[in-house]
Image: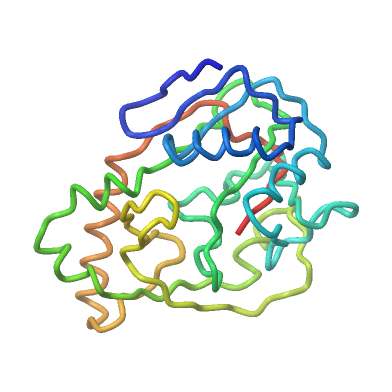
Length: 241
């Protein structure tokens, strides 16, 4: 196995691991790499939808997207499609996938299908480093606080994207989560806020809440990696609890 680090903050490209192998032994290897590098990339795998789901089931129960209709035969997989004339990217703003869920998702598996000749770059942030380097005064303010995360409603996910089909649900969901979470496997503390879904810190006035959140978002952007041609015009997307 060859592991190529992609930045000082996070990210690794992995060679020598076969994603078609859905054995427990192979999953443990992949999970260990994920926990260490936060985001991992495998090229030239050519896995099927069944193989993608078989791997995903090791991470936890498969989820269906709350607003977007999944594939006909594989409802847990959402196909992300950007039409040629569309300018907005689906999911282009800073976010932690489905952080508005009652139980936040552990991992997301994306399988590239169509790659544009240029662009397609996506940024990922290391939320462990974001927490570790946060100002101590801010740490004290937020360490025991919770924040409200909102799903924003179905229109946010489908109305501006012709290729994204609604499943008919338009209800908005909100849930509260600790701002500082401890990963159950690594024991590491992480900053769990994001620009798209985190709306307010509980216990603060709106103005102070906004100021603290904006400051944290600035820290988050420092600890990112920009990867080119990783997210594409079409993807198969499946979330795992």
